[in-house]
Length: 162
Ligand code: RB5
Image (cartoon, rainbow, N blue to C red):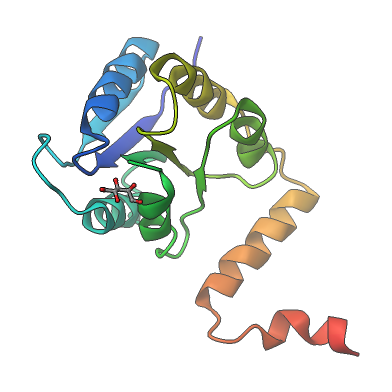
């Protein structure tokens, strides 16, 4: 029995085919999935779609976001520009697992030009099914989310300078 999640997806034109394949895969797994664009393989800007998806995630409309561009990096930067979003650009199973266990990543980005189609399903399944461990890791995640709001690093680095 899986924990059914509400998932928002977004991509640019490069990520579009992989996104549609993963949308179908997640629906077969039993998750509820919305694709907010791009809606075809015509040129589309990854910052815009990454940001749109991240805004919806941060608002609480979704449990997780799955984002795809050529490398995964550009769209992860857009997602991480939103307070409350922790997007991992993932290429390996250990990072897929640990980004949930220790960092409570609520978004994942994949590079359609980087990861093989069968590997990406394994990474995604691991990431979707791994729970956050909490405890001391929750304190660190809280710290990160506070930093997101903080224009200067001083509050966090002061203890290192004394
Ligand atoms: C588009 O050519 C490409 O730059 C984009 O998909 C992505 O890789 C950016 O990070």
